Length: 116
Image 1 (tube, one colour):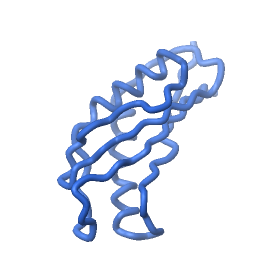
Image 2 (cartoon, one colour; image 1 turned 180 degrees about the horizontal axis):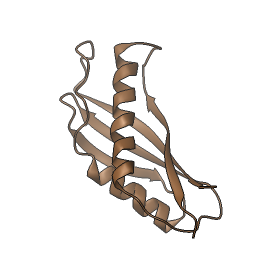
Image 3 (cartoon, one colour; image 1 turned 30 degrees about the horizontal axis):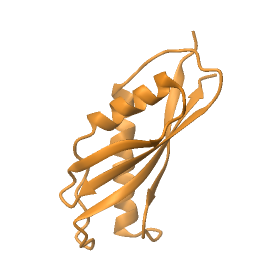
């Protein structure tokens, strides 16, 4: 039986500029979901790579208001694992002081690859 690995490929944060506080914040959000992946382990046979896109809405204080899969991979095991990860993260770092928005929406893309 081969393991598969879910890699957090991208976090798209609208309005980020390179090396800005918002970019650093987006990276910390990404790390929160990577850490959640490490707590969810599974083994299964994976014939190919699968991609799952999700949308996470975060409040100014870092509370996760919602986290949903927007584009499932079509593989029930992969989609289910991503759903568990999304449900497990309840809080991420708060916004930097320079961000005045009440909430931000992040697009997070998970890629499950066969482990070789």
